[in-house]
Amino acid sequence: MPYLFKDTTRAAQRLQVLAEVFATSSRAFLQDAVSTTPEVAIDLGCGPGYTTHLLAETTHCGHTFGFDNSEHFIVLATQSSTLDISFVHHDVTQLPFPTGQSNLISCRMLLTHLQNPASIIERWSTQLHPQGLLLLEEVEYIQTEYPPFRSYLGIVAAMLEQQQNQLYIGSTLDTQRVSSDLQRHISRVYSLPVSTAQAATMFFLNIQSWKNSPFIQEQYSANMIDQMERDLQELAATATNTNEIEWGMRQIAYERC
Ligand SMILES: C[S@@+](CC[C@H](N)C(=O)[O-])C[C@H]1O[C@@H](n2cnc3c(N)ncnc32)[C@H](O)[C@@H]1O
Image (cartoon, rainbow, N blue to C red; front, top):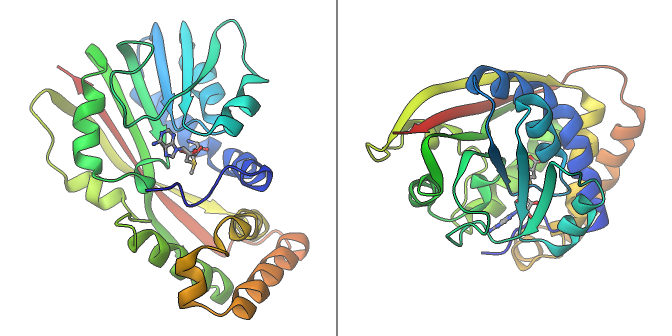
C-alpha cells in the first residue's frame, strides 16, 4: 500500500513540526526504555531524520541508522548525517536489513501505515541481537472537542481504514500477542497536550498530500476539503496559546530473549 502522507516538501515541513511536538514524549520513552548504550541503533521510517537524531542524542548510541523508502526524505536526512548518524534508502518491510542485526530498533508513527503490523513486529525482531530492544511509539487516541479538528481526524481515520490501516493503532499493539522470543518491558500511554496552532499546522500541511486521492475525491466534496484546508491554515496563523487537543501515545518496549 502506498504511504498516504507522501514525501513532498510540505510533507517534510509537517514532519519538522511533528518532531517539535512529539520530542517530549519520544525522549521520555527512550530515557525510560534504554538503560545501556547501544552499539548500533536503527530508526525505521525516519523521514527527514528528526527521530534518528533524537534517538542518537538520547541513547548516545555508537552508530545510528535511519531507514526510509522515500528517496526524497533520505536526501533531506542525509544533509544532516554525521560520522555517527547515517541514512539508508530501504523499505522496512524487506528483510534482512542492509546494516545487519542491531542492538536497538525504534519506530514512531510507522506501523499505522504498514500492513499486518503483528507479523512485521515478529520479522523485525529477527534483526535484533539477543537482548536487543524493539521500541514502538504509535497513536492510541487523539482527544478533541474542537469541530475543525474532529472533522479532519474523521477523514484521516477513514482514509487509513479503507486501506486496512488504523489511525489509532496503539490499543491493537497493546493487546497483540507476540512470540515468546520477545519479552515486553513497557506498554504505557503518554498523554501529550498540543497547542491549537501546532495541531492546525500539522493538519493543514497534511491535506495537500491526500486531497487529490481517489478515495477523498469519491467520498468528500472538493469545496469542503479546500475550505477545511483554509480554515486550518488560518487557525495555524491566528490561534492563541490554547490547547484544544491532546494526543495519547502508546509506547511499547520489547526485548529479544
Ligand atoms: C508519519 S512518518 C513518521 C516519520 C518519523 N518516524 C517521525 O515520527 O517523525 C512515516 C514515515 O515512514 C516512511 N515509510 C512508510 N512506509 C515505509 C516503508 N515500507 N519502508 C520505509 N519507510 C516507510 C514514510 O516515508 C515516512 O517518512
